[in-house]
Amino acid sequence: MPVQTHTFEYSLFETLEELSPSFQSLMQEAVLARANAYAPYSNFSVGAAVLLDNGVIVRGNNQENAAYPSGLCAERVAIFYASAQYPGVPIKAIAVTANTHLDPSETPASPCGNCRQTLAEYQQKQSTSIPIIFMGASGKIVCCNSVLDLLPFAFSAKFLK
Ligand code: THU
Image (cartoon, rainbow, N blue to C red; front, side, top):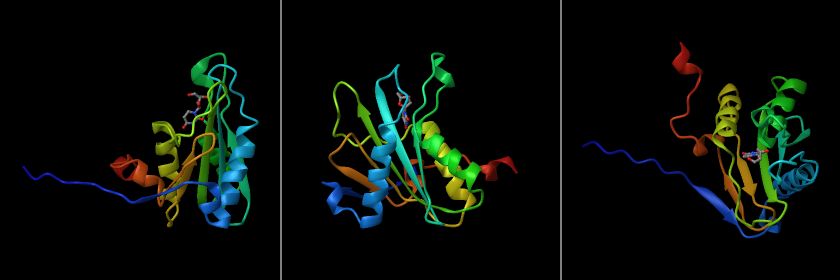
């Protein structure tokens, strides 16, 4: 059987201070965004910060709804806002942080499947990879070089042709 393997490299940092200055400040923006999450149902606050090629940082956070599926994740709030306000401006990186209100976790919280698919769309639209960095409330930070690393065999526009 012709078994294939798929691997990818990522970095794991112990503290924010180990990150490059630009990733450090991007994660700090995500932490600020997290504080404004509207998460009364899950008590799970997520913050995202998107760094654009023009230097602008767009913040987003999860927005919940009494009709649960009507809410939206932090990553998509941020990236949709970025695309709506700055169409065509390449995305340089995204940082994500999550915090449970009752029991803050130090386990890096990786984006959900819907957000991975959404992030993949924007990377495929531009010619450069979008690095993604994520952490829990605090603690270790995972840095991936490309959002597509988190979504092998991603569905994309090429299948629609
Ligand atoms: N959430 C995010 O904001 N991003 C993710 O990638 C996963 C989940 C939000 C959605 C919901 O408001 C809460 O976290 C619990 O699922």
